[in-house]
Amino acid sequence: MPCMKPPPQYQGTPNRYLLTRGSCLWRVHGRKYGPRAFKDQPSGRLYGGGRFDATDADSYPFCYLALDETTALAEALVRDLEFDEYGGRRLPRSAVERRQVSGLTLTRDMDLVSLLSSRDLAAVAQDEWLVTVKGDGYPQTRDWAHWIRRHAPGAHGLIWSSLRDQGEPAIILFGDRCAATFGGNYERTLLHEVPELAVDLDDDAGAEWLNRRLEPYHVAVDYPGHASLRR
Image (cartoon, rainbow, N blue to C red; front, side):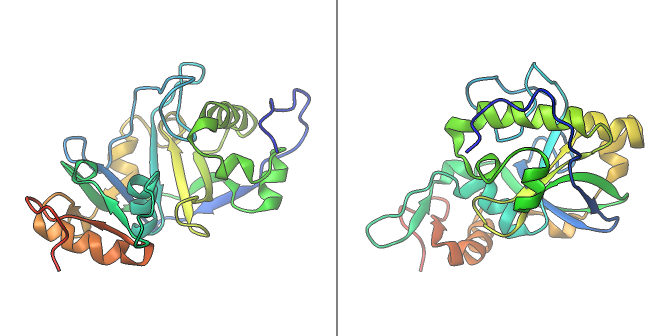
């Protein structure tokens, strides 16, 4: 369904999800930005960007995370990979260059809009289209995210079921809402970095670590400097 405009006379109430203090969150990011950095540049309205990014129509810092490390990996790295004739998928080295996976703990409870179930989606006049449509539908899903924000003014973000790791939650946090609740230094005070959980993805050890975790998804990455996967 609903590649359509949000209802102009909406009278519903979005369902909420409490993300509790102490939760471990995971993300894949460029090393130069650090694990707690929110993206502060909006995406284009029509091209590129992610499912629920900010645009110049509704500009806010944002950060995508997951409750499981493999979900963060799948969301960031597995999209658009095609299966080969052997039933496997090859992750190009360029996808992991200068990138890291990091674990963070949440220092405060967070109030999110839930899009996890059919009932949650119906509460915002939507169905599974909103969380399963692929990239060519992202201009519309971004518009819906902005509309949902307007109808949930206290929400710090959204939570939904990952398309690339079905049944597992994916999360976006809204930096403007976090700043309003937790202060201007919210990136440092809200997310606590756990250095021992960080893994560089572009060296030999990172390739070994990544291949173990992505094996159930039939995804593998070559080791640095090797033309084929080391056995």
